[in-house]
Amino acid sequence: MTLYEKKHEYQEIRVNTLEEINEIIADYNSFYDLPRPGISAVDDPSVYLQTFFRGQSDASWEIQASIEREKKQEYEILADFELKHDMSLFDVIAHIQHYQTGTRFIDFTTDKDVALYFACSENMDKDGALFMWCYAPHKAEWYTACVLTELAQVKNDSTMSVQELSEMILRKYPKINDIFKETIDLNTAVVSFLDHGFMAVPPETAKENNLRLKRQSGCFYVCGVKFERPLNGVSRISTHAGYNKFYPHSVQIPDGLRNGNALVKIVICKDLKKEILCYLEEKGITKEYLLPN
Image (cartoon, rainbow, N blue to C red; front, side):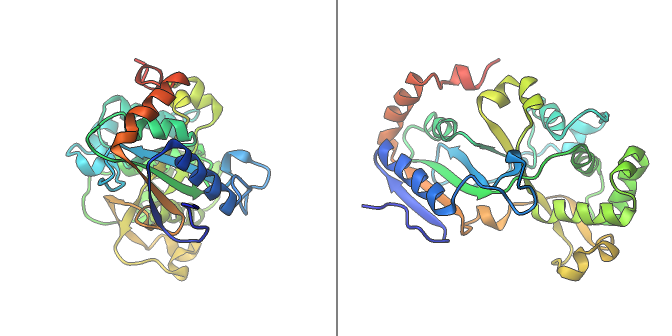
């Protein structure tokens, strides 16, 4: 019996065996022809359209960013943070996570076994969930870290304009003019980041400096923000983008992670959890391996 229906709709599938999980993943990748080049980066495998996995030990939980569960604000962690030109988005993420506070980053992995571990390692009396979502990641460059670092340090809870944020970034990081010749070009990029959010896959250099990230094949979906009014085609283009106003400390989970067409939720029977953990242990995937001190 085919568990995964090959169609562009959200699916929630309950499984009772590891073989069923593997079958669903294979059918999903086959249906979407993954991984494969995206429209804008044919020669860069790091931004290919591919399957991302997330494991949650309680199937009743929604996917959410950890900052939604925390009272501490990002700017309290980044108040004295100085972003250097050779630092990446993942350096910023590592800095914030060092303080074990909430972030607007949602953990994903490109390794289904890692996601399976997190789906099965806790809440043994609850069914777990393995999520699959295909997405074309954004190549997280230095200016991306600039945008998000400055956003996190805004202390104002009321709305601000994209133009205001861009001007803050340019004052603090004048070297960004090497990338964006005009402020209106930066405005367009900021709107794109903040409206949709994006998936970021770490480069190999980031993994070399972060053993946990490397072993977990970790990546992050960076959530966007809430805008004062819905954006349309006109408000997105460069000459208009700067006028858009948004709430800097809001967190918007993308529609794709709320029963989106490409999202599949595999519900893992609680009685299957121990068997999966034994299978993973034979492959060397344990708490000690994935969460080194």
